[in-house]
Amino acid sequence: MASQSSESKLGFWTLISIVISAELGASIFLLPSQLAHFRTLGLIGWGLAGIGAILIAIVFAYLCINTSKVGGPHIYARMFFGEKVGFFVTWIYWCGAWACNPILIATAVNYLMALTGDLPLATKLACEISLVLSLTFLNTKGVKTSGNVEMVLTVLKVLPLVIVPIVAFNHINLDNFKEMTPINLTPMKTIIGATILSFWSFVGLEGGTNPAGVTKNPRRNIPLAIIVGTSFVAIISIINTISIFGITPPSELENIGAPFSHVMVTLFGGSFDKLIGVLTFLMCYGSLNAWVLFSGQIARSAASEGMMPKFFNRLNKNGAPANALWLSSLGTILILFILKSPLIGDKIVKLLDMSIVVYVTLYTMAILAYIKFMRTNKIKSLSQMFVTILALAFCSLILFNTEKSHFIFLIGMIATGIPAYLYLRKGKAS
Image (tube, rainbow, N blue to C red; front, side):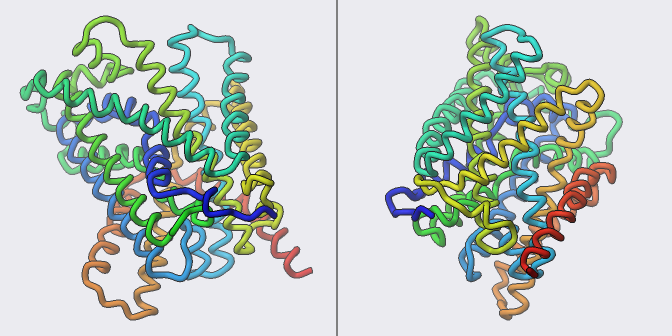
């Protein structure tokens, strides 16, 4: 097993870029149109989603700083709720890390077709598989290499998101914000619906905890990175959405599939389809790189805790968990093939859209773990109690207001983990 030297570990700024990239995917290009359905109160929902995400990030920071270990929700589930709960939290977390990647991959390839034109189904599948294989290979070169690429991609992604609001400022029409709610929804239902939809933009906020074993000074850098990175994503997202609402009335915006393309043509003139296509591809590619990294590190950290087979904890000469990376990528490729099936594809896409339930459940487990830690250690910090309770209330709001059918994806993941758990327990007994 290769060891990790200090020079090959992730630094603070690299870690921030990974956190930002995990959250800042295609959603920022797609959500303004979807959020326009909720009219101006939808902006309040996005703001609440951002506040909720920051509260959850702070709870993860508390866990990293105050408990004996630094890691993702699966680590804390095992610490405070036992081996069985820890295993199933690990299983759904690892499966979620690679099973939901096809949405990013499909979006990246679809926007890339702005340059290439429409592609045959076989060619499109080949491009999608190439994305997975190229990023898996990149991550087998070590976290330092992957992290350096992520920093470059993050800068390229963030620049247009800073430029657009600045240029749009003098073109905003305040009359566009007069319609507060859609006709068929009450204000409360409007805000809750927009909050649930908007939280999709923050899935992955805990990602900075996953490479804890390959991070410099993790007890300092990880808490700072997840809080700063999530706060940045919240601010940049809401500013861009307000700018887009100010340029195009929400009643028109909800029927526009590419809101950024529309706004850039309005602001600068000409056709920006190809530029937006490249930018969205880079966003998806960067986010996918972060999630490939996470899938390997989740399995590796779980294996080191005895929650996954030792096979996942083996490192190559570059200090990367190559076995975990390649097996995760094979899972992603399998789902890519399933998505192309005319009989199953639509149902699988619907299940993948339910991924938010999986991650909010994981965040809830981490929050409950910290509540148990505070009770066990008799921590009486009012600020920590206040933040933790608010974070739990936010997660509960999403779970209680989500359609019950959306829990099918979560239940399916737990069911597939039962044979794996029995196999692992049998191996330990023998």
